[in-house]
Length: 317
Ligand SMILES: Nc1ncnc2c1ncn2[C@@H]1O[C@H](COP(=O)(O)OP(=O)(O)OP(=O)(O)O)[C@@H](O)[C@H]1O
Ligand SMILES: [Mg+2]
Figure (cartoon, helix red, strand yellow):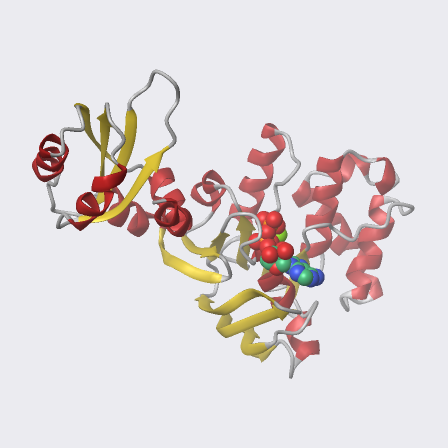
């Protein structure tokens, strides 16, 4: 339903999206997870025909977003990062207008608007001016305009940003209920959002895809990795390279030391390796004053943080 191939977007000298590829099957809810500046909104703007890519292609419902822009756009409901809701319009009036804009016949636009308001829980505020609504309610109006013309594909850029916890749960439930009938891609920088709504996740960082898997798949793959934390009396700077060279070690990071606390080194290792005794030997023979050595399994949250911070950690050494 959504096919992205080698998509590149360059803004002047900055590459925001660097050759990303992924696809979304009919009825699937895909989480597009990445930290601030990863390229999520850029990708979604390209998918929704809001701006062109520098290279590569994207197809929605079989239509190329550039070459068959009209057909592709007709298949999409798009909730941008900043929803384009008209502050001077009343909610219902705006939704009828949005439905008409998306090609809904005038005899059906009122019903389409009412259905969307009902689904998004905004029927009670339908006569109020959008400009007077709270941010959360405005976000709901944005979501309602995205679904009013009942498009097969929904592109939702951070749909729960700015909502209170109760509203977040309601909107996530709504999005989940829209899956199946609609194919959905939603961007977020928070993992619980993906866990609560999506079946599959594409993790993006610095404009490239760093992981793509089902939620269960990523959990299984990453949770089998372990992290060993060393507490040392002396600065381990000189032996970091040796620690890194131990077979099974995949990443290493030294945390900055606070007054009165030991030096700490986090060592991550691949599945099936027990590196503890090798690490201990290196620290003891270098006389670093090994105080503690703890091993823990990586949680899913840790796993994602690792996926998107691996470069920075390595650079720190
Ligand atoms: N119009 C623009 N001109 C120049 N650079 C831009 C423009 N829009 C975005 N960028 C840059 O492109 C990169 C990706 O931005 P993008 O908005 O796609 O990230 P994002 O993943 O949506 O981040 P956030 O979580 O903060 O919304 C960033 O480095 C950003 O500064
Ligand atoms: Mg964004």
